[in-house]
Length: 322
Image (tube, rainbow, N blue to C red):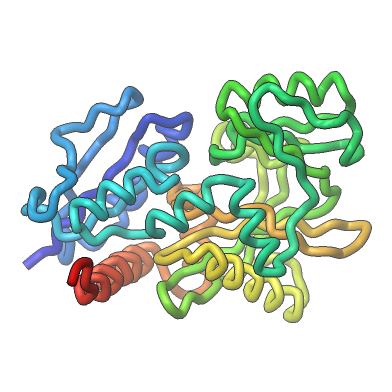
């Protein structure tokens, strides 16, 4: 008998179209002999089609496991994960806590700092306040705290550009992160697993613009990727170690992609962020890193579903009352 997999995609987010592209790649790659795909599409205004998942145990009898492919807000931030917990459904990827912490760039950095992991110096700007101009030097990167795919991110080289960057970021989030600009190289490393996560061979991103922004990721088709990354065996092992440590620090499960910056002047490696629902589009690096590491897309999907069912079975043994 086939396993019924509810693929949830779209969403009330600036990454709506990317979600559709990721879902398409997953649906095309999934083993049709083993799985029956159920489509759950969320519109840009949050309406579910053909029907919503109900937040009650036993309320969704046709679903065996859920595969959320919702990038960004209202999907990657713990909100949908909370719905799936209420529904008592197995689901692919991180739980509520890890999703929420990883989505919020400030909270992720706090947790990484507490775990002794290297992150770039930053300041948090909440409400209408402004940081002291030049406090972190220039250039700086200005980012909405809770958004993905580099949406709303700007590079500021002076006080006027900083002010404009803050105005843009605030259209996406009330909390904004200002980070010291790092001149160097960009890397990504895929992680997979529950209690015993493992890291794939890392890749390097060669942006066609000043930094790897939304247009460079999804529209221009000019950025280059190098896999395996041009690193020594020791550098590769260190990056994989830090990726797994970051994954554990935020209590991630299922999957995540950890992004790194390697500063040219100091040769210091920094964790930039962790993405709990990485892209699965035709150009996305998470599945490509695993394919290079010996796990092609259909097998990767198999493993992610196995991990979801494994975690759910473990939670079924827990008691929630006396």
